[in-house]
Image (cartoon, rainbow, N blue to C red; front, side, top):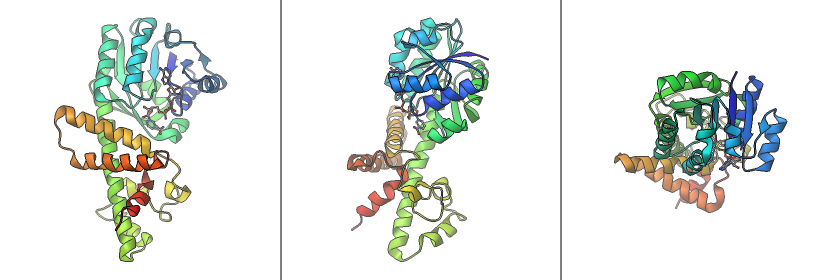
Length: 295
Ligand code: NAD
């Protein structure tokens, strides 16, 4: 079992750190929020006063922070010098690919191993230890990190070198953002054409239009009882986080001159939905915004 420093104990990091404790690891946490530290203590972790204090002598240092800027701030704060020689740094935040690759370079310069390992599965997956990890970094770092990640998730996929975990995450979520809008448009059109939501669901969920946005997250109440549409569009996956991921995809696309016109349009639609005060709604709630745009 490892000594793990866990920096960023928010909605995701808190339950992930708790699952590491349950698996028998020694966890030392740090967060700027006192409430987050209290919750970590209750879950059986010890808490530190600074990121470096948390990392002192640790075998593994995990970060779960809001963005690449926060990650580089923490990596620049002395943690890389504080951990045990050859320690493994795992960043599970969703970050831009460029910051992720800079973080790997900083870790490597300090003689540390590193992985970018963003997640899919949300707070529910973090709590139930069923997250999917998309992992970038060397084969050595991956093999060292795998048992730690498996204590917090059910799928751990090595996607290639440094930054490729973040690349996989934003490509997947760009598909999701675009497909959800397509599904919402189809259900809004069906309503105007007098086709029931159940009939469209029965056809599209078993035909060529089938996708996760229909079968797991159907954006209208009824056909999929567990979807957020049946629960007032409570997240689930908040629209503001979808907007974050779509913007990261656009930033990456611009850097490598990739054509992503539908990804760009999806980002614009989610930006309008967010600006209208719905950033905290589930992202499937965009159907009501689209219906509101109708002539
Ligand atoms: P959150 O805001 O609940 O948690 C972030 C935590 O980081 C906060 O507790 C904050 O106090 C802490 N923090 C910020 N700066 C810090 C610093 N310098 N040092 C120490 N702690 C610091 O966010 P979250 O929902 O837990 O998301 C974390 C990451 O996971 C984000 O990158 C997000 O995009 C990604 N993610 C979230 C979800 C989700 O459903 N919430 C799903 C997949 C991925």
